[in-house]
Amino acid sequence: MTLTKRDLVIRISSETDLGQQQVFDVVQKTLDYITESLAKGDKVELRNFGVFEVKVRKARVGRNPNKPETDVPIPARSMVKFKAGKEMRAEVLKLPAKA
Image (tube, rainbow, N blue to C red):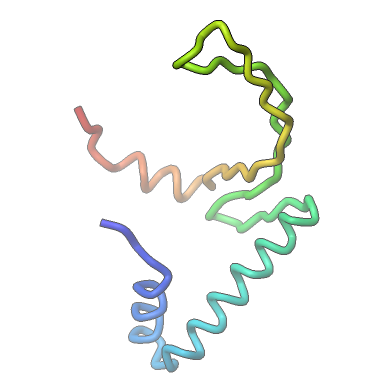
């Protein structure tokens, strides 16, 4: 099962008696601020949830599986890394391991 932004808005709206549009606006604005901060290279830390930060992957040489003799240069690039907080890790560890 996947939790979508829409599902989140509906659940929060029903639990808080706020209108769905109000909740949607708050959720969207929160995500926009997180994105904006990451785009500036800042770290975003949400206590008990986790930390988002931008990491730069080094340039490297890859291989084309269809033509292994051909080197393919892969440029350096920025990516977002997420590290789960203590409480989230504890909840996820309660899940049974899949075979």
